[in-house]
Length: 336
Image (cartoon, rainbow, N blue to C red; front, side):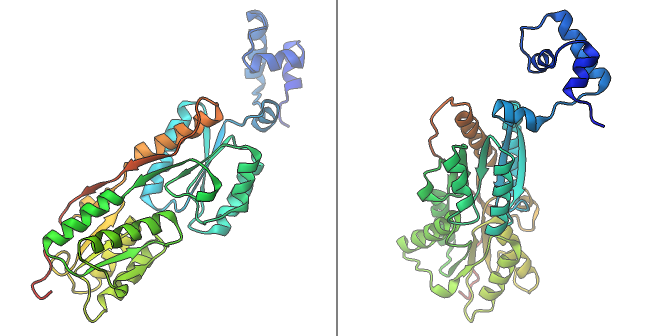
C-alpha cells in the first residue's frame, strides 16, 4: 500500500497543509517543524504524486519531443541537446519516435496532450495535423525543429542548407561532372522540398540542368536510398555524381554501390546532406553538408522554455549549414 500525505502528517503530528507547505518549499514553516516533516517523509519512504502536483500547480515540468525518426543520428543528437538544456532548468523530456508515420505521430500527440506536458517540440511527419492544432488552440507552447507546417504560425528552429548546397554543386562542377543526380526526401516535407529545389536550381543556374530520370525520391530512410541508387546505376547512362538528401539515404546509396563493381569516387561521386561521425570512417570518407546539431537542439529547447516561462517572445531562427569536403567526390571517369 502506498504512503500518502496523510500518513506523513499523522507520523509527524502536523496537518496535511503543513506537510504540503514543507514539500513545496514554502518558508512559512519553522525549521523545527520542517525537520520533523522531512524526517517522517524519509522514514515512511513517501514519494509525492507528480501528476497530482502538476494538476494543482498547473505545470508538469515535462516537455514532449516528437522526432521524425529516432534511428537518424541527426535526431538522436537533437534529442540529446534538448534533454541537456531542459534538464538544466529542471524539466524532464518525453521522447516520441514518429518513424515518419503521420498516424504514429498523431497517437503520440494525443498521449502528450493527455499528460499535460508544459510544452512541445516536434519535427512533423506530415503537412497538417488536427492533434497539433489541439496543442496550439489550448495555449500549450509549441516549437518546430528542422521541419515546419507553415500555416500554423508556430516558431521554427531549422538549418538553411541553400548556401552549402550551392557550394557542393560548384565543387562537383569544378571536378568536371556533367551528369548530376539527386536522391530526394519526400518533397511534401520542408527539408525534402527545400533541398531538392536548391540542388536543382543551383545546378540550373550554372548550366547543368538535371533531367527527370536523374531525380529519385526516398523517404529519408536507408532502404529507400539503397533502392534509389540501384535505379540510378541501372540507367543506360548513369550519373557520375549523386547527392543524397539525408545521411540514412546516403548510407543506403553506399550500400547499393557496394553490391556492385562500381567504385567511389572513381566511377561515381557521392555526397550527403547531414554529416555523421561514420562518414569520417567510411572508405572513402564521405563529403557531407553538416548541420550544427548541438546548436540547433539547444536553441530549440531555450526557445520553448522561454515561451513556457514567458521570458521572451518566440522568433523563428535559421542556422547556416557547412559543406565538409572529403574523398567520396572526385573527377568523373574519363568515359563521361
